[in-house]
Length: 180
Image (cartoon, rainbow, N blue to C red):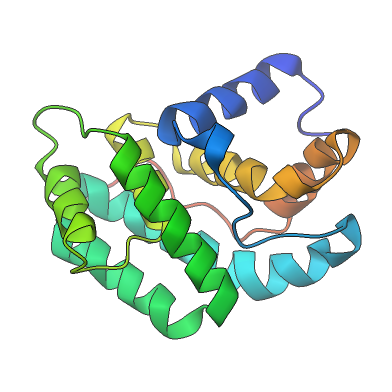
């Protein structure tokens, strides 16, 4: 299994805590319920909404700006279902209120102000992924930490197997190096 090594699990958890300092107060995100609902969630929510948003926000945080992050939020608002979208927005707003952007990270600073002003919805996946990108956390680790946060409603002994299965079923991650 991908997460048999304790150091890998520790790194994923470290990233989850670094990028979501409000971890202890977060409620359920887009997954809730027993492990029997994982396959449906992976196909209907993770692959269609969370993964593309995470990859987009990670990329934009490195190359774009707050408007582009808001565009990712807009897409999630248009495509993610009611209660799931609301939980994502609520968690994102909590996350935005709980952290300060590193000095000089103008994209995160502007985006945080837009969320606070109600100019953009501030989905959790958008904020978390953009924050991870500012800390130079690779996309695969970012998404794995997001999935870990999603799996918190499962019994402890099932979480890492669920995370591994979800990561295994994702599309290929984009390469880290880009041509200049």
